[in-house]
Length: 431
Image (cartoon, rainbow, N blue to C red; front, side, top):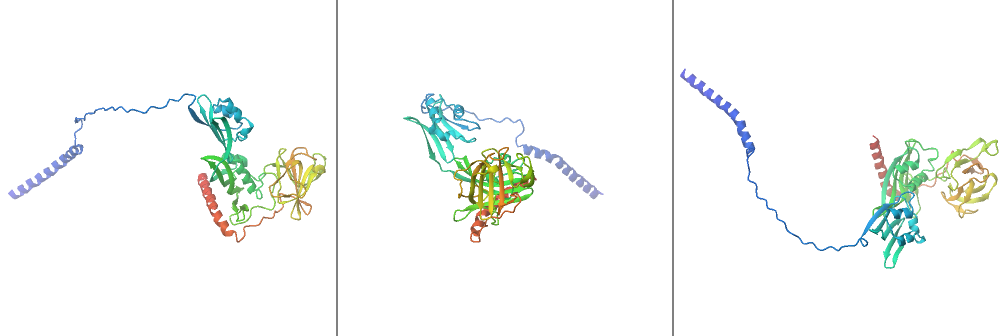
């Protein structure tokens, strides 16, 4: 009995001990965690301000008339020399007279988007002016003998750029939206002109990707150069081209497997236009007022639009001929001839026996002969038999030779990678 009571008392004591520890330990931890009790006042160190006088060197005092500043203005559409100088706040009759004179012809060729830099004093006196035009830097400098102008060549930095776009209305509108120059747009049209008729084949949603070279001077874009590679997706079909120049300096555009994309004949003698009359056996003639065959294609275009030779050839005839008006006839190889009628004039040097290359300008759109408005009448004949130039199968130019293939593959591989990278980027953006 006594042993049992002692065991019971010991067990109750251990249980009370554990219970007390469980209640007290959390409060011990809180006190330890604080380290310093809240609201404890701590003695702050004394702060002493020290002020030391530093003697600065005396600066030269410039008068308002001697102090000069560099200003920059971007050339806008419709700008003249006078309006540009006014925005630059130049009030210098001597300099303005020289800059508006014949000795400053480079400044008269203002290109929208380019920058003009001028160093002027506060009262508008011009000390210097710089304008980069093509490959030359136009400068105006004030010296001991007055204000003088000059031009000097500059070294341009070549860069390879990539852009892409989508057709919404026209090729030019799409390239403008992609911030591409008209020069690049024209090259794209010329590259694919033997496969795509840009007058009637474009569709909303067609896409293009282009790799091209651009030239800069001190970070400022000066001009665009050669299109190096391009892809055009027209009505779901992809056309690709890459530029290659062989060891002899001859260059052209090819597919990535070495086929020449250039056909022996261009589909159209005009870069951009619209067809007003097609090839047909029955058309009501607007002047003769009778039904008769129309053995060519009529392209409407403003008077003066340049007309291109659709293939390499020799001028067989140039002059006036009845209803054709001013006419140029080219012979290609032995059996092909092309006719270009209603011209307002002929290009310089175009006469019988002259050799021309594909794309050369041979004349200009007009309305001579039987014509009710400015347009080009174009005919394509084989052995003097009229053919529809929009339907006849055109022969291709020679492909890359076996000897040139290794150099060709080495040159075009980087271009193929660039097009593929941009294509994947566009696909991801569309997704």
